Image 1 (cartoon, rainbow, N blue to C red):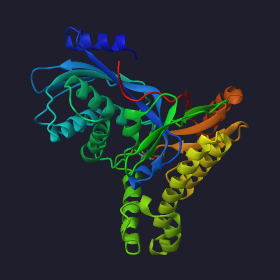
Image 2 (tube, helix red, strand yellow):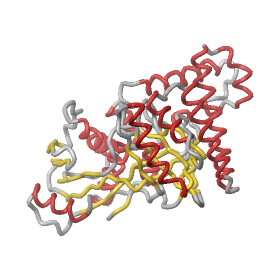
Image 3 (cartoon, protein in one colour):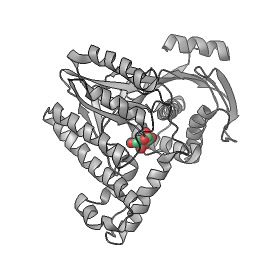
Image 4 (spheres, rainbow, N blue to C red):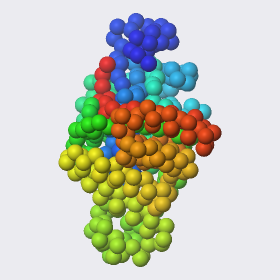
Length: 386
Ligand code: GLA
């Protein structure tokens, strides 16, 4: 996907002059460590990747939104004053949800003609939907010169997904898609939304993403259940710890002392979240000391915990991780994102990259009968005007 292609498609679809066409992009993400911690007010360390949603369009003088999705080859039209959930074309809801959220804060927007497309593999856990939300809000901010901060835009996107699409996701994906920085990982405290872009110096190593090509569905899945279990655990622990608002507020020592009030499953879920938070802090320290080996070790621990305690891995993800770890020179491998399919993230020594590609391609297909996807990822910038 490139700018010229998008502009050509726009002209073909809407048949208009493309002089005043606004074009923006927003990237997908992978998370290095800190999984299922965001909606518990914890810590995360994602990077924005060089796969994007691209959006181009122009204002209209009425309240009509016309959108063409390049990848789905579908057109949709709706009125800003009667936004409804679209059961047939799910992709529309990410855009419509953001527009609804904008209208709810009385943003002064009107209609637009839009085309969009992208190169983020869908359903791979690389947050193509968050990227679509972020591209949309950023596009409308610039098109209508809205006075709205990045953090407000991020929150609007999350609200669109929670309330309109119906997925109770945290804030990580939208945050890094909006504010990620080239060559940096984004260290985010999901409780107070303070963040720092940390230089990702992995001399001699690459971040490599492996796609299980097992599609994952977040909506209506185990995801909302995990979140509910964590929230219920907080209510139970409040009896002893009245000051806590989120799981993140519970220290490991307090958890170990009072965990007996929780059932066995809730104990495992909370254990993952609290120790994962600590792992993120340790991982950030390790990066600061240039201790890549320790960073990798923490990633491995994270996977173990996601598999055993949070139970969001699956056999394909575990096989992918096992194959990666069997290669000398892979110092960390774990599932990334919500789980139940999607991708793994690996820290791979540059000298063994060829071997890594060959082994994953061959072994993964042999063991699962699915062809994997493999990409080298460098941290890229978040949303931008093209
Ligand atoms: C999905 C959600 C995020 C986060 C991850 C798990 O990607 O959208 O908010 O909860 O899962 O870490």
